Length: 211
Image (cartoon, rainbow, N blue to C red):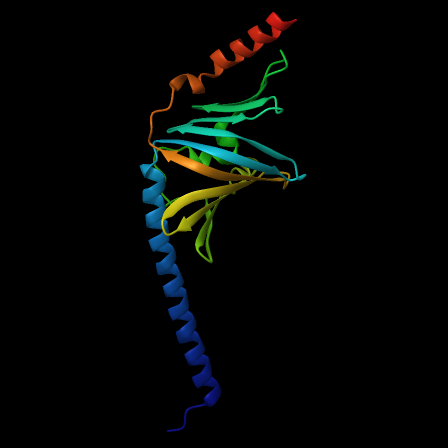
């Protein structure tokens, strides 16, 4: 019985494509589990940061995270801004202005994906892609039901697993890249660092005192 060569080639192509997809899916699942375990093991985090804005501006500073829901970006001079998240609220404070800080719901910003106490990747509707590039894993979060929250891409080394950087893409398509250095995980972090009301009062008091 003769077998059509074209059909045979097509069958082999389908077979190997299927095997390739299964292998990629399985590999991604392994990375997902390992990274999920790593992220969920983080209760507190301290790091130095280098922030690169879409316009090329570079700022340095310190990052503090206390899960769930608490974060502080403390930028080095000459920057005047301080970004804090606590629970549902994220604020941007200008340390040289008595005007009210900008306020947002943390859930309306991409960084909210990183502050959850328990992160599930395989059952996360916001998980967009998992891509392997050289020795790094790139995981992107985007919720089509909340497009204004933007997109968050996390980059991890594979061996050992460690968070290296992230890129936030806002609703307008502007990208902000944050590189992390000198990570310290699960050491105590002062709760006062995340007290938004206290920080705003301190800033306003200093400004009034210097007038």
